[in-house]
Picture: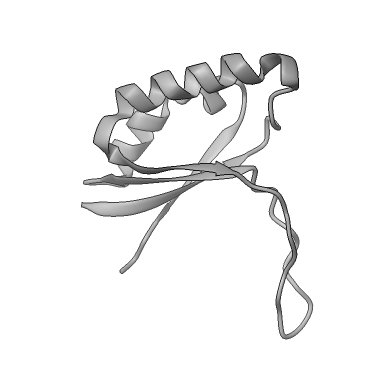
Length: 98
C-alpha cells in the first residue's frame, strides 16, 4: 500500500450557513471511503514560509487528508465523489515516495 497526501485547492471554505451540510457530506464520504483514509485531515491556513532565497509563490492549500491505496488511480476513483470536488474544488494527489 502506498500513502498519498491529498491537498484541497479552490472552492474556498463553506460559509457558516453551509458548514453543517458540508461537514455532514464529508462524514458520509468518510464512511464510504472506509479504511483507505488514514487521516481525515483538517482545514489549513497559511502561517509563513522559510527559504534561503526568494520563497516560492504561496500555494493556496485549504486542507489536507492522507489516504492509503494500491495506486494513484484507486485514490482518484475514491476522490471522485468527495464533497469538496462536488462543490467545485480541486483535490491534488501527491504520493509519498518512501
